[in-house]
Length: 174
Length: 125
Image (cartoon, rainbow over all chains, first blue to last red; front, side):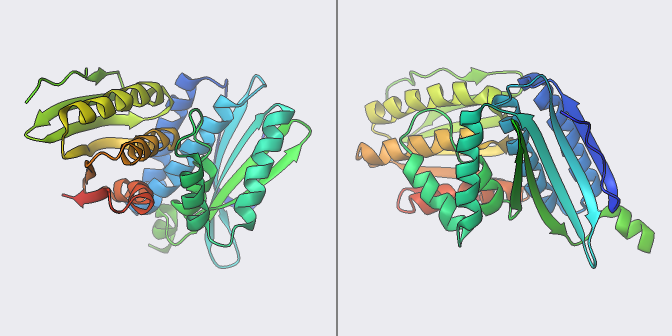
């Protein structure tokens, strides 16, 4: 997996590459929680991004077939706003890639992410095993958009949303 | 009323403390509902469902005020619990007690209320 680099319009960039273990994922998520709390001055906004990062970090850890996974947070400046992007990368089996692509296509074509999430909840309520709700939750509950890229056996999922204000922005405008 | 036959869950980062008060089964969740918590929470909820049936309680109240996070697998465990309660025809409400200052709690649990509005309620304190 190549080392990720920040895009030129990234004002803030954090990338953590780690072995896909539950304990390491939890340590990484504690750092992400501090990062979100530090950068975003609204606790509700911060908790939405933290939830998304948590779901993505758990996904890449659980389904990785490679020795490394990475989680990246980048504050990127658009024409008139800032966008916080969370990128999660791992290597996964062909079966997993097909399954996640199916879910992501359903999610991206859903007209209403909350309705889609509710439908998934009802469909899977009595099915034992994995939840299959994480990505839909990121969109419905977190209000983030989700994109993805599959290159060979590498999957990148990007969850992103505009951020009205963040602390560095506030300081600069002082 | 019979004695509760379900054990608390004590982990480094997650805990479940059940108590019986009158005809309500209270369940206090603490810590972080992450990957490590999914298994213990799932088993606990199966036990508590049996207890709700045995004791014929009128409500199961989940106090999540000291909970820092719930991942989607933990939410799924709660969803399965609610579906099972509804499926068994138990006359038992499911209540979530949240901390109004922690907006994520209501935001995360609202989907459960939408799923089963006649059974599930959320109370902010």
